[in-house]
Image (cartoon, rainbow, N blue to C red):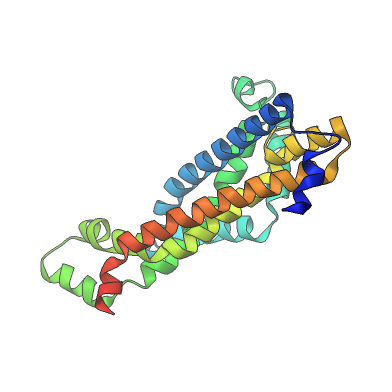
Length: 236
């Protein structure tokens, strides 16, 4: 642990004030990521069903949406929504909400993760065993009931490993929120760096925080996979 000694000696940046800034950044980061995942996940479920079962006139627009948001950088999407809202909504009743950088960032993050999650769920839906579907039809289930009771629960379980990567990606990608004046973890590091001129200490500390949160997410999803996929491990 000798490499940590320079961080704790001399020009000590770990004061009550700076730790408070880091804490605010962590709270803002987790809040932004969590809300984006919730909103994006809720959007992704009907979009994934439209991609899997929808008519071409419905499937096409959803494909285009996922193609655009997966094919362009998140930071570009953030800039378009953030600066676009300032030009188009400034004289509307929505401006009191959108003048805060958090909400354009939330929209950009939610739409981005919705696009990726849609494709993750679509792939999981298409992998539903044919036998499960035929058995449900034999019991007289309607298409809606089949999707609700058989297809979606089964798809959610299969999508967990891929979705855990998407959650981690969103956590790391949230660092771009600092470019639109949001005090996230990376923004807090910039703030401490500008105050103490100590880039290594500021950003190494934030990197360690990101690592801790990432390991917590991995542990959570491993526990979920162990619980929800226990029947597969028992079968093997």
